Length: 269
Image (cartoon, rainbow, N blue to C red; front, side):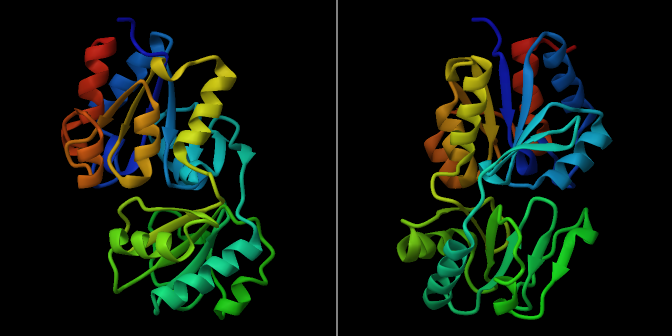
């Protein structure tokens, strides 16, 4: 069979090693695939600012599906080309429902450029610290008048799997809930926004059918596009739900599992 025309890969726990870096082997495999005419699309829960850091360090460009499908981002021009935001009223209602179902949650708003958080939201990510902006109360979070790419809910009590189940039971019809393995972190998007939906639209614009896409992922938020792609691989370190749902597997992210498959498909470069 001919090699795929498009490589869709998650970042954390998939393409990146556990320290957040790209191995030299993985960079070589990606560049070899691009040299043969394949397109690489990063499909990640991360917002564009983290993709910028990665792309600069590795010398990679192209397109990224960010924030679990809410944004399509052109890495070369650092431009958001497509955005599907969560209405403020929906975000506020979801937060109220979740606060009742799982008391003690903290909330933050991801805008794509920064994250605004209220005092009860204590989770911090490294990499772009200047992007974190505190507000004085939860009520003030709803007065910030920013585009909401994602509502983030963090629990110090529940793990992400349990929190996802609670959220879907409490408000599963009004928003899209998922998680990417973050410590008690729930990621909430507008209804219907998934990695698969956005990747499918992107491929449609390019005339690339699902059968010509190979995909890699490790967490529940990756399941939609792993199942949509003609060939989907679960990483060796993947979440149990991913390992049980995706037939093909490769080595772990620490063992350059994406590169292992790309070398088989495109050669070693």
